[in-house]
Structures are given as structure tokens and as C-alpha cells.
Amino acid sequence: MIEKREILQTMHMIQQENFDIRTITLGINLLDCSDRDANRCAERVYEKICRTARDLVKTGEEIETELGIPIVNKRISVTPISLICQDDPRPIALALDRAAAEVGVNFLGGYSALMHKGATLADERLLASIPEVLSETKFLCSSVNVASTRAGINMNAVKEMGEIIKRTAELTADQDGLGCAKLVVFANAVEDNPFMAGAFCGVGEPECAINVGVSGPGVVKVALEHVKGMPFDVVAETIKRTAFKITRVGQLVAKEASKRMNIPFGIVDLSLAPTPARGDSVAHILTEMGLLNAGAPGTTAALALLNDAVKKGGIMASNHVGGLSGAFIPVSEDIGMIEAVSAGALTLEKLEAMTCVCSVGLDMIAIPGDTSAATISGIIADEAAIGMINNKTTAVRLIPAVGKKAGDLVEFGGLLGRAPVMSVNTQDNSEFIARGGRIPAPVHSMRN
Image 1 (cartoon, one colour):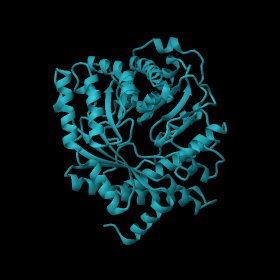
Image 2 (cartoon, rainbow, N blue to C red):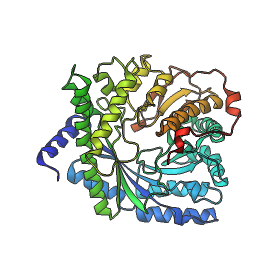
Image 3 (spheres, rainbow, N blue to C red):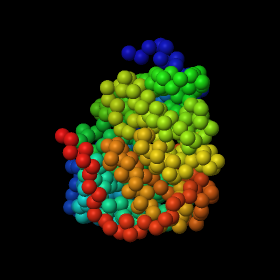
Image 4 (cartoon, helix red, strand yellow):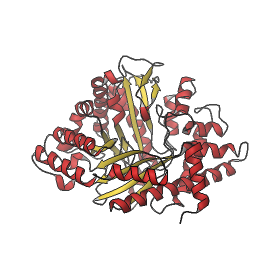
């Protein structure tokens, strides 16, 4: 039961503190669309998505109007395409993009492959097509899982992904490498993530499901303004209480969408997802705790507290919390992160340390366009190792800015924002990456 007091608090969060529902994402199982003929498979995919998601945008807009809660994005995630494609995946990619346009969603995720233990022929075909596909489509997002705690790190896939990211940047150089903003490399990818670019509908998911991603960095920041100078016990409790309120709203929207579309409610992902707008920054939550800039000594500890408190508050508000859930730290999508990088307070190495305790990983980071594929692969391997050893999801979304160097600025627009190009350690690692093979899973992977 939602109380009157909660409604008034929610109205205040929306009007004064940049609170919104970041996305309603409809997960759709496409396993029954598989066909040896790529064109027939593409036709089945297009038909099923259009049929299943035909009311998604309308339903989101109706809920938004009736409840007065902003719902920024309506999205679709589908079964990893390498699992249904038995031929050239490009016709399916074009069908996915066409279906996304037809039903009116912002993004469609699932042009994906799961390669943490090895690669099928379908995986390899999909990987080879990624640069071309992301340069030719508007709505399609791609992800590749290269590592897991159970399987270790597939270094062959890591090597390939460095080369694919470079090629994707080159093919979308006229858009500052925008194709790379729609491509993420995972370790321990989850099956019910509603956020792009990494969303896909895993094989353990139902036929279809409504997953909601909430966002409220501004709400948390304002809450902490009222406990300035108080001990961290109070800070943690304040964040927990705030996360509870945010998640309650997300669950309300998810259940309402589920009822109206007659589709099961999946999860609420209570990740704090920032935007480039001032007042909507995860980095500014950290500075509200007493840091001059994100990246100052103490940043990792502050982020660990934030991530944990958000989860503790959220799981009390909903029985079905999932996805990634915690705090995102994308550079280009967070005005506080942009300011910290521009001030020289935040480096790539410090961001890597922060990923040990946050929701995902190195996200929306622009790097010099002449960065080698081996260097990119090395960054991916390091981040995958953090995820593998710590039994958590980590990810890399790097954007080599062709023709630009450290200190330059790239512009993506909208929620993707803008990013200062960050310097990268260019010490040669090509011999390391060339080894290939698989880095074994850690000993604690044997728990059963």
C-alpha cells in the first residue's frame, strides 16, 4: 500500500531533485525464432517483437501521465542473437533495428554473445559483424560476455574485442565513435539488466518480462545535504532510507506496466544512473560526503558505502530486486565525473579501483584514438579479472576518439553526454594479449 505521505515525498523528488524512472525495459525471448535461413529468422524476430512490444511505449506514456512520474526511456532486450542465429546475423540486426523503430523504443539490446568459456561459430560470426552493424543501425546495442567467476577469462575473446572496439570507432568516427557507446564487454553479465548498452534477455528468463530501472542520484545528494558533517553511520542510514523510497516508486511503475500489458513483472534495478544534467550526478553524492572531487583519496570508500547502502535500502522495498543494482559511474553521462576528469582529479587507474566496489565498471570513457587494440584488450582483461575474482559484474565501455588526444572533448548528446578524452597507459602489452587461451577460474569458483 502506497501511503499519502509517500506520494507527497515522491512529488517533491520529481519536481525538485531530478528523480525519474530511467527505463521500462521489456525482455523478449526469441529462442523460438531460430531458423537456418537468416532471412526467415529475421522475419520471425521482427514479427515477434512488433507483436509483443506494440503497446510498450503507449503503456509507459499512459503511466507517466496518470501517475506524474517521468519515465525517460522505453526499451527492449532480447535473447542473445548468437543463440538463435545459425547463419549470417546481419539480416537479423537490421530486423531488430527496424522493429525498434516500428514500436518506438529508444534502444534495443541483445545483439550479444556469451563467450566466457569459448566461442561457437555463431558467436564468431556475430563478433565479426559488430563494427559494421553498429555503424549502420540507430537503436541496436551490443554486448559480449568474456569472463565469469565459474569459467575464468576467455583471452581469445578479449583480444578480439580490443580489435572490434577499434574498428567500430573507425567506422563511426564522424560521430566521435558513437558506435562504441552502444557496445559493452562484460564479466559475469546478468540476464535481467534493463540498462543499455548491456541489456539482454537471458535463457533463464520467462517468455517475456517487464524490468524497470530507477534513478535518483539527485535525491540521494539532497538527502545527504541534511546530514552534513555527521558520522558515516548516519550517512549510510540516510542513503538506505532514500533508496527505499526510490525503489518503492520503481516497483509501483513495474507492477502497473505488468498489469496493463499482461506481462510478468521481472525486477526493479535500483541502480543510481546519472545524467549529464546538473543535480543528477553520482559523483556529487561523493563530494557531498566531503571530497573536493571524485577521485580524491577516500573516493573508493565513499563509493563502497553508497553502493552497499543503496542495495540495503532497495531490497527492503521490493521482493524482486535484480539487474545490476547499486551505483553507476559512467564518465560522459555524469556531470560530476566530467568535472573531476577535467580537473585532473580522476584518472583511468582510479576509476578501475572504484569499479571494485560499484555496480559495473569502466563506463563511457573516451580514450585517445591512437590507442592500440592490445591496450584496449589489456584494459578489458584487467576489468574482467576484477569481476571474476570478486564474483561481481564488471564491464568496459571504451570509446577511442579517432583523431583526438587526451584533453580533447567528444560530444554524444542526450543521455550519453560528453566526455573529456582520458590519457591511457601505453606501455606495450601486445605479447601478453597475443598469448590467447583462457585464464583459469579462481579457486572459490568451486563452491557448490
